[in-house]
Every structure is written in structure tokens, then in C-alpha cells.
Image 1 (cartoon, rainbow, N blue to C red):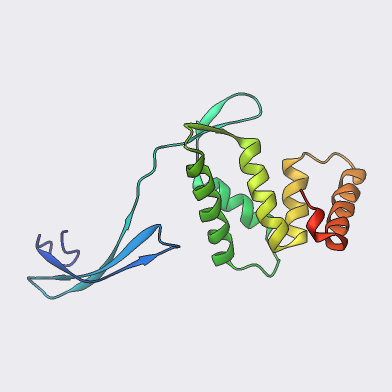
Image 2 (cartoon, helix red, strand yellow; image 1 turned 90 degrees about the vertical axis):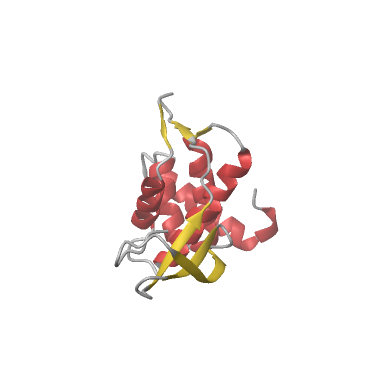
Length: 158
């Protein structure tokens, strides 16, 4: 590992620990030439996943798009960025567990809705309205009735 300060090639690992639900390793390093300390992260590189859109078109999975859609759904809600990152990591973990080269966008949308349902009802309805393409007020009422029903019977949700 090259030192970011002096570009010397020899560094030693001072500390190493798992981070991000053990999907990465954080390493504290020290340059053997200038004694500068810096942090690096090591991640497992997963094979690229292709997302199959409703139209049938395929595009590479884009983590940024997923984060952005969650941020929009959670805007002005009491949801911190750390929660959004946790949802994204959970979804990515589930996608990687499928061990498939492609996944339908509908599957990703369902995973997002399931996660948001547990976090915030308003964010869930916001995301659902776009994902399910609500076209009128009745769609919103139906989503709200489903939330109310799940609150009354929490073990009956599907």
C-alpha cells in the first residue's frame, strides 16, 4: 500500500477490524518512511448484477440510484442517513444471496418496500406510490388501509 503523504511503498497495518456488518475491513496503516497514519477499507468485490427493468431492458445495478430513491422517499422524515445505508446494505446482501446474474427491478422494489414498511409508514407510502405507479387517490387509500390492517394484525402481514 502506497503512503498518501510521501508515496513510499512500505506500510504496516497497525489495527484491523470488521465494519459495516462485517462486509468490509477497516485497516489503520502507518508509513514506514514518514510515520504517517491513514485508514483504508477492504471490501469483497461481488460480481456485477444486471437489473431487468419493466420494459425488459437491462442495466447494471447502481447503488447510487437505490440510495437516491430511498432519500427521496425519506425526505423530511425522522430517518437518518445511517438507516438508509443500512437498508441498502441489507438489500445488497439479499441480492447477492440470490447468486443470480440478473434480478428484476420489481424484486428490488419489493425489498425496498419491505424495509421501508418496518422503518416509516410515510416513506413506505411515498416509495409505493412511485413503485406501484399510483394513478389516483384510491391507490393511496388502499395502501393506507393495508398499513392500518397490519397494525391491527401484525402477524398477518405477507
